[in-house]
Amino acid sequence: MKHKNMSDSIEEYLKDLLEAQGNVEIQRSEIASLFDCVPSQINYVINTRFTIHHGYQVESKRGGGGYIRIYEIQVRDEIDQIEKFLELTHHPLSQAAAESMIETLYQNEIITFLEGKLMLSAMDDHHLTTRESVNNQIRANILRSMLSQLLIKEENQ
Image (tube, rainbow, N blue to C red; front, side, top):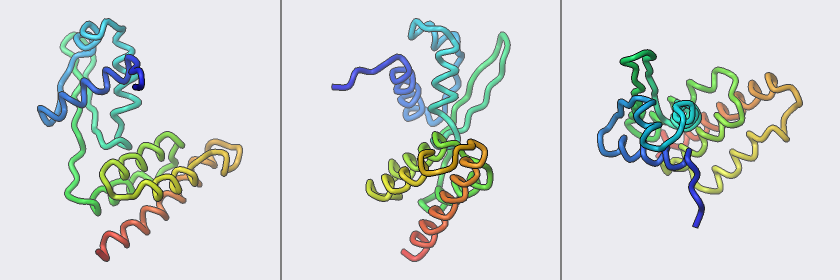
C-alpha cells in the first residue's frame, strides 16, 4: 500500500468535498488547522493539483474574510474536453502542465493507457532542446497536433 503524504491527504479531502458539493469554498487557515499544517501547504496543493490543466478553476480572495473557491470545469463530452485543452495549447506549456492534461484525458477515458504513455513520452524534456522557453512552445505545438487528431477521431465516431 502506498503511503500518503500530507499533500495527497489534503488533495483527497478537497476532492471528496468537491464530489459531495459540486464546488468548494474554503479558508486556508481552517484547512491548515484541520491537517495541522501551515497555510502555505494548502496553497501548494491548490496551485499544483487543482489547476486548469487538471480540470479545475480556482478563485481566491485574500484578507480577513478571504476564501478559496474550487470548481470542477464542466465539460459536455469528450469533444468539449479536447477543445478546452486545445485552447490551452496556444500558449507555451511546461512538461508538468502537459502531463496533467494527458492524465485528465486518460482519467476521463478519452485516451487509452497506451495512447497516454505515447503522448507523455513525446512531452518529455529529454526529447526536446535544452532551452526551456523553446521546449515549452514545441511541447504546446506537439500536443496541439495530437489533440487535433483526437478531435477528428471523436467527431468521426
